[in-house]
Length: 364
Image (cartoon, rainbow, N blue to C red):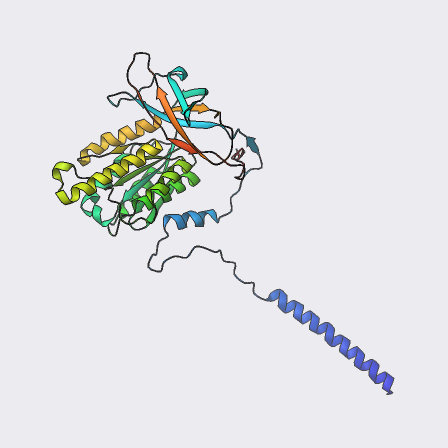
C-alpha cells in the first residue's frame, strides 16, 4: 500500500475514534448524577433541636405559593381603625354611630367615611412565658391558656408559642381547637425571660401569616423582662407597623404580697405591660387568682368581637413612611364619659414599597 493509501486509512481511523469518543463523553455527561439542590437557611444552634419561631417563618416562606392571576384594586390610602368603646364602669357600648366619633390624625380632624360594628373572625396568637421565673405558676398559666382557647369560634384561627431566651412556635396557625389545646401540654419552664423579643417575633408572624384582617396577640407572663436583645422602643415601632392588638395577662404579685426588694421590679413589670397594651389598642390584665381567668378570657373575646371599625382617607396624602399619631374621641348623647381604645398611630406607606393595591384574590 502506498503512502497516500496509508494516510487515508489513518485519517479514517482517527475520525472514527473522535466520533466514538464524543459519543461516550455525551453519554457519561447525561448519566452523571445531578447535584442535590439544597435550600439556604439561617444557621441554627446545634443545641437547639427545634426551630425558633423566626426560623420557622423563614422556612415556610421558602415554599412556593400558588396564587390566582386575578387582581383586585383597592385604595392604598384608606385607614381602618378597630375601636373598642367602654363607659366608666368598663362596660362595652354598642349603640354608637358615625356622629358619635371624631378622629384626629397628627391633631388634624379627619372626615370619617363610615363606621360599622360587627363580629368578625380573628387571627390570634397565644404566647406563653415558660421561663424559670414562671415555674411555680405554670399550672395556673396552662389553665388560663385553656380558658382562652375555649372562647375560639369556628372561623377564628390561632397559634401557640412559648418563650424563654428564645421564642418557639409550638402550633402554627390553625382553626383546629383540639390541636391548639394539645399544644399546651408541652410547656417546660426553664431559662430566662425575653419578653420583648417574643412580642416582636410573634407580632411579625401574626402580621405575615394571619389570614383575618383583625389580628391580636394574647400574652401570658409575669412581665419580668431580663434577657431581650431588643429594646422597648423597637417593640413599640413593630407593634405600630404590624397593626396587631396586644392583650397582656400579667401574673405579677401585688404590693401586699411583695417584698421590698421585688416591689420595684413588679411595679416596672406592670408599667411595661400597660404601655405595650395601650400602644396597640389592647389591654393589660393583672389577675390575683387563676379563677379570674374565665372572666378575663370572656372580656378579651368580647373586646375583639364587638369593636367598631372606623374608615377614613387621611388629609395628609403624602406617602413618605412617616409615623402618624391617632386620637379617637367619643361623644355620647346622654353625656356619659366614654373611653375609646385603639392603636395610637400608624406608619404611612412609601412610594418605594410594593403596591399593596394589587391584592391577589383566592381561587374560588
